[in-house]
Image 1 (cartoon, rainbow, N blue to C red):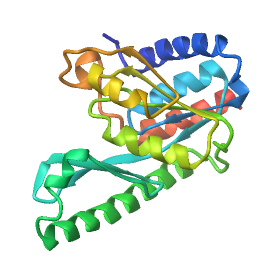
Image 2: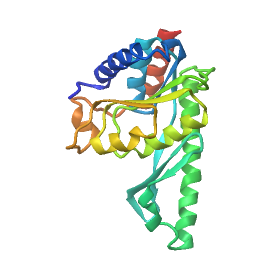
Image 3: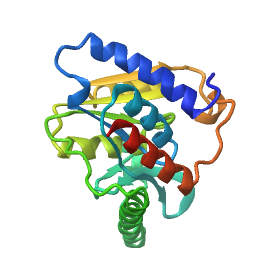
Length: 226
């Protein structure tokens, strides 16, 4: 259990620092920490401040089945990346109206994520973002459940040609951990429970992260590492 995101971030930062110390290929100066808002931003800030490296964000959102809002069928990222659950084939192509609704939703979500990312960065007064090319990129969130939004983030990171991509999170169910291991250079998770219900069940304090917290956290982290 973690008391809150800040304590989880500090624990994860300490673990990553140990891993970096044992890895001669990368140093903190060659590293960029990327938080997945909202909950991943406090985690990313703790890691960036501990490692004294740049921080960035990448917005990724789940995509729902047009005929069943309770069913997550994939995710989109602000980069325009779209990933679909492999099982989605049985839901797709059944009728033209379904595919049209799905394409409309994809376009809307991509625009929403782009605008949200732009707004947070602008409010945090981040005018120059770090270059991911040739760097060690550490993608982080406060927890990973199904891994759909994480997959969209991983695909985006690959497009930006980093030297390596590490995935880091306080908690991920064991099956998701196994599935995502092959999609990144390294997956660091503090907890990988086989009995998993929800990310929030592993935190004493798992409050909703508001816009103001995202902005203030980014602003403070930028000051701390500059």
